[in-house]
Length: 226
Image 1 (cartoon, helix red, strand yellow):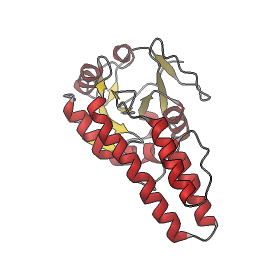
Image 2 (tube, rainbow, N blue to C red):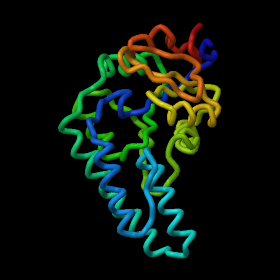
Image 3 (tube, one colour):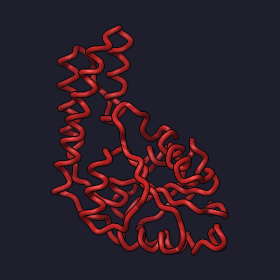
Image 4 (cartoon, rainbow, N blue to C red):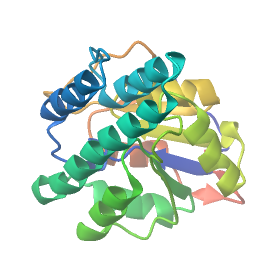
């Protein structure tokens, strides 16, 4: 299925799309589970951020607002510490810097829409020489994260563009789900050897980021040329 005409905005996921962050999410999940156990609530969710939200809601539903706030703060502190630590083990995805630079040169507005914290995103982009990306919509603890469409809508509102003018590129279901729910086109980044199947069907699929350049011609008169 081809991308729609009139694209002006390219939204990128961060971890595993532009940068391999190198965070140990399984160990982190176990750490957060230990915190949840301390507060007397189960934590069986595979996805750490979603699990934190579910555990927080459980405590709130039990009328334990103070404990819920303490749990959320403690859990998110573990997440941020791991994300920031992981920068020392991270590396850019092949051709990511060049592709982002070229897409911006072609006249597209580029933004990051990520479930990672803004500090690690900013540090990773700077460390590996990415061009200055003026808008980063990262995780603010407690706010909705992908696959919610809210972060995508937030980016488009700040950029002043409509959903039909945007495409989001990411490596997993959260990115595709957020994009579909927000009404934007989606591209799944699924490199060889790491083939990913998702419940949400992407508009397009690429095995390397360089393939994006054939899909995103220069913007002319405010729209992508076809």
